Length: 178
Image 1 (spheres, helix red, strand yellow):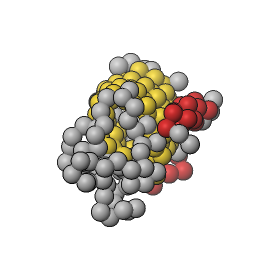
Image 2: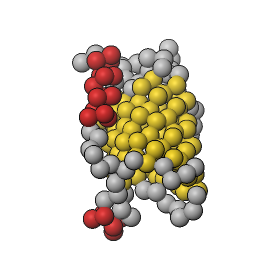
Image 3: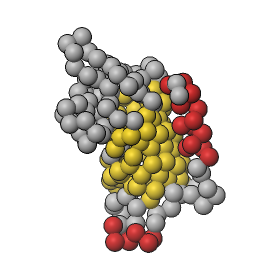
Image 4: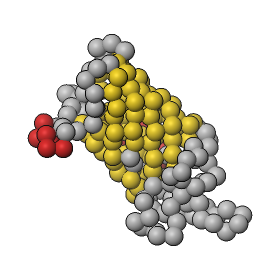
């Protein structure tokens, strides 16, 4: 499947996976391939547009804090790595300011091989990646909240112990409670 064929597939996955009783939708803009201690250079850049859907909290998972499942799609403006992810998120805090950690699994369309001039491999090493994230947010009103968030995709060296550049994204997202 080509890189461009995956883009509508990922967007469709996000839009088709939305049931009638979901909790909130979110959209965001992220700087792509931000340099952090968790990543190496991938040769990518640009801005990621993110759209997602966060379902109601799972009451049966009370023993781990009643996480909310989510699905999201991320598309890069410069032809870099796009991905779709599913996972669980927790909203922690009782006041207008809260923290939202999350962990998910992503599938991406980045290159299978990308080699730097010095011979280092810059590809992500696996089609399936972990997608941890953390956000700090504030409630604007009953329906809207805004979050500053960090998202990361990598395989944590589980699929290739010698290579794992990962990609970090930092940005803002707007949430709308349905």
